Image (cartoon, rainbow, N blue to C red):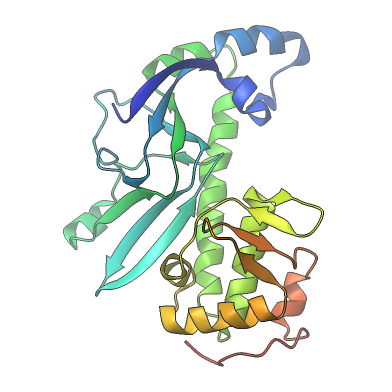
Length: 250
């Protein structure tokens, strides 16, 4: 089992949105019955991520806290997927085609993380509330949708557009609204951002400097970010209506 156990929690207290579909009259009983173990994972490489669970009924790990990355190297070029609270992950699953091509991934944590273990016992608990499995499946599909967006985003010519749309997405998903801007409590390095949007780090750093000078983003000393352009219309960015300066290509 991955990480250090920190006891158990009522899953619906930690993730209230999972209760969608459970009838109101059954909600209190479901809250008491759906108990899961929480495990703590320290920053750095997640060495046990690929360890396959013994039971085929093991659904995976539901991220409760922390920023996780999954990095894939293809011809020494890194690509990163960013994951965080709300994502259901099964790190040990590798499609056979990728395995044959010897494509491997590395899971890491950017900050201390906590995951809920959605294991074999959960199947037994959830039998009376089958809708919760549908909601968990929605989380998996949502992750696939984001990856599709990430692939499309990496085809955009302008790096500043890629950056703005990526910061907008991360701010919408994990940001905390402040009096000025949206704080993104994730320590993302320039290298990680470059791998996230499919660009070279030097060009990404240059564009980050430009966007910072324009007052659109700001990085704190602890590595977290503040995004000041959460009201920007993504379609306006794509249409080139907002005239941000920067290199025309990766």
